[in-house]
Image 1: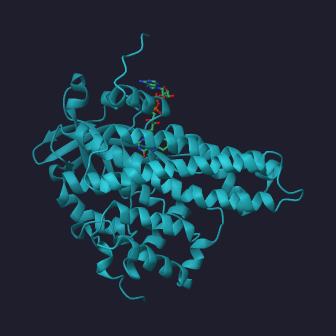
Image 2: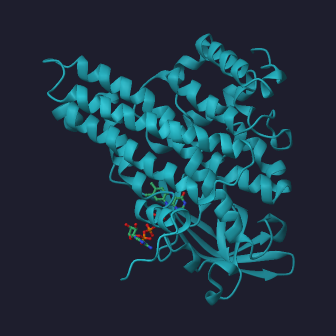
Image 3: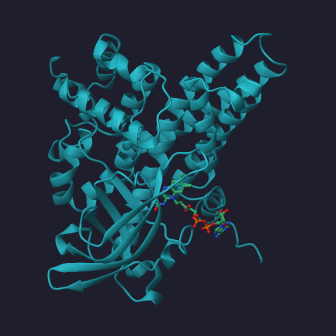
Length: 392
Ligand SMILES: Cc1cc2nc3c(=O)[nH]c(=O)nc-3n(C[C@H](O)[C@H](O)[C@H](O)COP(=O)(O)OP(=O)(O)OC[C@H]3O[C@@H](n4cnc5c(N)ncnc54)[C@H](O)[C@@H]3O)c2cc1C
């Protein structure tokens, strides 16, 4: 058991970074997480949750950046940014549940602190993780048309409908769902956010097998699921505001996490390619350089966004810039790996190459998840540049 990381790190980000780096370098128990075995979704999430639990139990390192009331140790988004940076540069995974933690926890903390106080401490410590149920078969980009319904009955809501593409849905213990509490015509004005336990009677989760072989996503069915009304995140029909607050975190903090991982991966790719028989393929140097620049550009942009979130500013639609840069950097890196690793990329059964292959598949979704690239560009055109609507 290591000593608790000092509380003074809340006010001294550089000391937190230095202390965390020393801890990650000098803790042999963490070596098990550095292995590059290729794991399926459930095993990967379970491994990452164990890493979160170990960091929390041995020093409380991953609890900085979250308020005391939700089980954190204080600090802000910049502490979380430092955590992702240092984990990645130490050759450790950025735990996958942290993406959903970044997506859901700030909104739950802001709009329903009682729920965050009740449930977030277990999430921070890797004891449970949550899923985000927004998308439906007929409502992805156009979320305001969603149809999963919650009707009020006494002290409860009763939910019926179907959600689709729920990340980590197959193993999450809690779901944060956007549901319709108003009339179908009410569009975004008639939506509410509600948190529920996956093991509530009437919830059915069906994993979706992806082309990569993983079942990272799930369909979730709600058949008259009874949820106590105090599980609302925000108030009834405030769901759209909660979702907009949440999406800026999903887009911005995911961008930072991805850049932290990509910076390590591009150097690993360089080493892998340089070690191939015959040396670097033609054009490799130029393409590696261009890829590195894309990642550094994303990081430069993202650092400003993270600082703004930490200062309590609303980033709002500007987070779409981060999301567009993230998708370009992520897909560029993995396309480069595919091109430079040649037939090894397609055929090798080594865990390292399998991991590149699986990540390439996942990178295809970078222009879809969290809002498609086309929709992000439309948001920028409408809300940031104020351009006139194009004629159909
Ligand atoms: C890996 C992955 C993880 C995901 N995780 C989650 C999750 O955890 N929770 C969740 O709720 N959802 C999740 N999603 C779903 C994701 O948010 C949606 O797929 C996305 O918002 C697009 O919605 P859709 O799939 O319904 O496509 P559609 O909205 O049907 O779009 C289809 C195509 O039309 C384009 N299009 C649509 N509207 C416009 C427009 N107005 N202007 C220009 N082009 C447009 C889109 O860009 C896209 O190319 C995930 C998706 C993926 C791939």
